[in-house]
Length: 368
Ligand SMILES: Cc1cc2nc3c(=O)[nH]c(=O)nc-3n(C[C@H](O)[C@H](O)[C@H](O)COP(=O)(O)OP(=O)(O)OC[C@H]3O[C@@H](n4cnc5c(N)ncnc54)[C@H](O)[C@@H]3O)c2cc1C
Image (cartoon, rainbow, N blue to C red; front, side, top):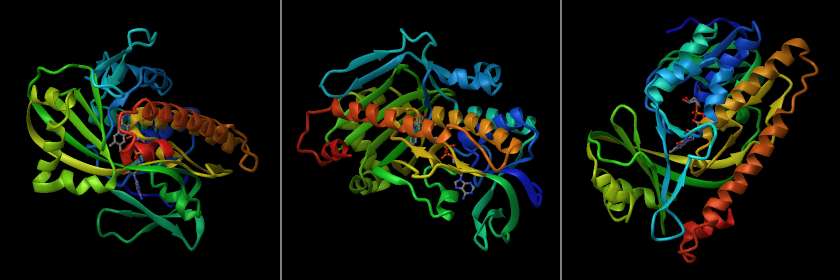
């Protein structure tokens, strides 16, 4: 367990892609003391692995491009999707000058960011939860290490909320996300013992939601059903036999899954929020990544967005150190603009599917 100090210039709550990128960017730009607080332990399984080609530009800025290329992340030639029509359509990255998109080895990717943050001088406190602020003082953070420890107060000059879509710190300031859509994902990770699969990411729309499947580095595969809360109990039925049955009933993703020999399967369910905070920053705090604005995974932009916000946090903290009373950046405008572009693209993607106009899933997506 890391020993916490009583004061840090910057405390970053959350050690996902956004929080770790912020730690690297801040230490690159400044000599500020930085603490990253993360409730998980290193190496715990995380969701999300598909990144656009542009991710490499951000990783160059963070100084980790070489480590990224040396790890066993895999490229992805494009998407194959049964969406809006009964036959698969193809969308290749061949024309993108930055090359193909990426299927990440998430544990290697997360370790790369954590190692770089530490090498740059940030302190990482794993297995540590932010549980609130002391006496309504927004910069006295209560942190609990391990399971049973009493919370330890830490003073932060500047606070970064990188706690993911629930934006835990913003809530203590009474700032709540405007949620415009909520979905539920059930994800299956498996080990592939015989790889006969396509390297393309596969998508398939059905009346109750959509399916996603990809081969991952290290002989792994991920399959996901994105649907609504009512469907979750069916998917969990009989030790997730419901998930297997739903996948097998598809015309494209299911038959492709059958070509892989899968073992050591694990299932995870989680809520997906699409929304943005009404206030994204103050003079001495900001929300970044999913805490600031969370996207539907159909966008495949979440990791990219988190890292981009982390880099922008590096600029804001530098400005704050130079003049704490008058911090000017265009961070909020950029995040709001990015959210509007996301909304447009998301609506476009869902709008392409018009086969089931009486399905509640598709009706709700169109009204959202
Ligand atoms: C099912 C699913 C599939 C997805 N697939 C993709 C994909 O293929 N590609 C993609 O780009 N994006 C994907 N996403 C989105 C992507 O995972 C997120 O956008 C991305 O992880 C956001 O990074 P972040 O650092 O902002 O938040 P997170 O990754 O959520 O990190 C937040 C961190 O804060 C920690 N934390 C939370 N509360 C506390 C607390 N109180 N104290 C201490 N620590 C705390 C959490 O443990 C977590 O590590 C997917 C999301 C889901 C749900």
